[in-house]
Length: 389
Image (cartoon, rainbow, N blue to C red):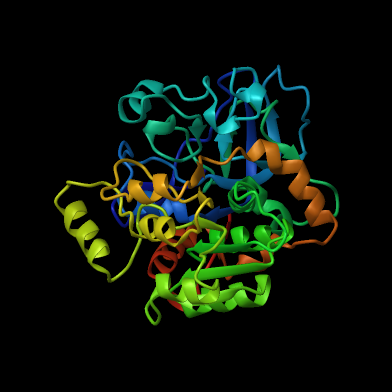
């Protein structure tokens, strides 16, 4: 089969690789019909995530048709169209039974690696380094799905791929980030990063009752999309001072909740952002925390800091004094996608949202390397790339 393989920083290639096989009785083989390039994939592409090996197949946002089933998978049948959550979850452990699907204890065969870095291991994740299991990803013609009796959800007849593809990750991720804000009537929510996850965080905050949403980014096309789709107020951080502008917009109080949808590769021209770049280049810091620091300082007293943006290691100069003295609540984590599949599908069916609004580029799988390049460099007004095997 053809698959997109990682070969080093800024080097991904579509190659011929062996077809996946059923290994365990709870496996399924999915013929991929749509897959997408995620902002999190760029952290692999940029070389920031350890334990990625040459030849690893990338991709964790994918859906398709069931073509083979292990003998213990009774909830699916050959020919079913399914969306597949990016967290791999067993359904039986302490955490899965409590709805903490991305904290699954049984799906990461390389848990010892994650334990050395983070103390405990999260779940396995498709196409996202050997630190999270070394599973082959879905930017391919076919993919093996473990615990297929738990994860994949059937797609209702009459719904096309683009309506449901983002249930695999970015729609639930943005929604969980907004839900974590405990939005009350009249609240203002500010979102750092207006990429795909940021767009869904803005849209979800509106769905959950926020009176105002504010998008912070530097890309005009992203800010325009936020205004058009979520009626967001916008701040271009290359043109306006973010903290002062947020104070002006909120009468000096600050946003009721803030969402960091940027993560470890934050950009900026402030002294702390330049400091991050220097320390990361010298391998004295793994993650650039400019957006997170700014969000913490901006949030009103007693507010919530929600962090869907991916962080992998260590961030310096976090203003913990502000966290403690302003009585801030932090909520974060890899998304518990399984929890949101059906509720968000119902919102799509009721026409409350069409997740396809973020798609700007549709490419063949063989054009995936080009897709990565334009997505990383934000060329051709690229916001979201969908690949068709």
